[in-house]
Amino acid sequence: MIRIGAGMKQKAIRKASKVAVISALGATIAGCASTSWPPMAMSGDRASKIGVDSRPLSDAVQSQEVLRAMTVVAEWQMANPSKHRTNDWQEATFWAGLSAFAPLSDDPGRYFGAIRRNGDANGWKPGPSPYCVDDYAITQSYFLLFRVENDRGMIAPTLTRFENMLRIPFDEPLDFSQEKTEREWVTCDSLFMLPPSLALAADGTGDSRYADFMNRLWWKTTDYLYDKEERLYYRDSRFFDRREANGQKVFWSRGNGWVLAGLARVLQYLPEDYPERQRYLRLFREMAPRIASLQGNDGYWRAGLLDPESWPTPETSGTGLYIYALAWGVNEGLLDRDAYEAVIRRGWSALVRSVRPDGMLGYVQPEADRPGKTTPDRTEVYGAGAFLLAGSEVYRMTMRSSTPGGSPPFP
Image 1 (cartoon, helix red, strand yellow):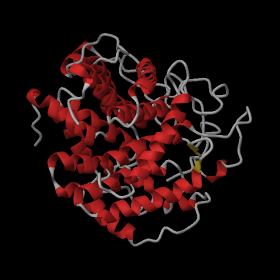
Image 2: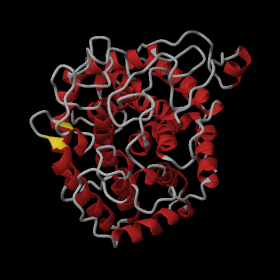
Image 3: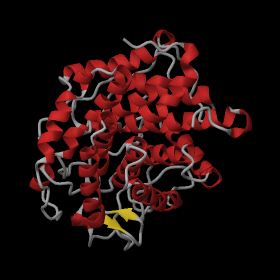
Image 4: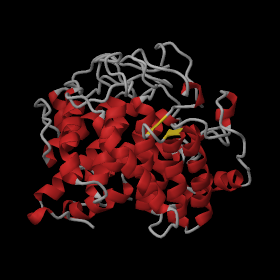
């Protein structure tokens, strides 16, 4: 039973910092049917019922405006569930975002309750594949709700799976094959899907084996896919020698968004005294300015980071992941606010401009493994999740700004 009253708002905000969470559209996706919905206008009755006025959304970086945008997007997604498996990675990103939004919202019980119902429906189990990283992304929401409710049944099935995983050597080379995605971290996406749950497991149980396992495989994948000159990740080995139309290397926006957001989440949940923690921090600070430099003047990152002319339309899933990670870094004092605040504000404005009046987030690239096209009416559940993650940290920025002297209401 969750009890978070209005008088606990600042405590909930503080907890949110720890609980926060394509060659063509028809291409086969490499990695362990996108869904679009018809327009649904938010009626005045529905808006009133969930406590949201029906005014057009504002992109102002003000606490109540940010919260209203998050509420509208969360409510639209909950009213329009995707057709994905309820424990698949696409859904997992939304539940991670909802976990970040819930303690900030005006009705935490409503959103934590939705997370709990999804976990109950899944039997608190990961997806079916024993070693595919995509099938473990959903467990982030399990561990995060465990932090709130302290019900070990929410994480017990995952910990059992982790015990089995720890016995596997994971010593194959990482050259890409579809079959290998079921057992090795061969894509950069992997660094968002599983590592945060392993960090949460280490923090929640005090068992450093989970962090050690994560650490070994994180740097195995990074050593293979990270381009030190570009300070960006290839999606997988198939892209080492491919080039964009302008001759630049192919670096996929959402793929690098998975990495930067994964880094933020690992740093957020990894025990403070973990010996390798500084290594993740150095990588985060190395990637952040490179990512920031690739933002378009309109606030969006394009699907192909080094060839925006070939991919001119906005893309919101990568943009959301970047704004989440950069704002988190600023809020934690890891990135300089003066250097990044304008980037974050432009990005948040861009995200809000992509939300339809009914609450649907548009310009989300469909499931993919490379840059691809987007449209204003294209959405996906993981895009809404990225939006909520971004909003949770932009909201924290507003609270820092509104505190006398600019100091945050949490350490």
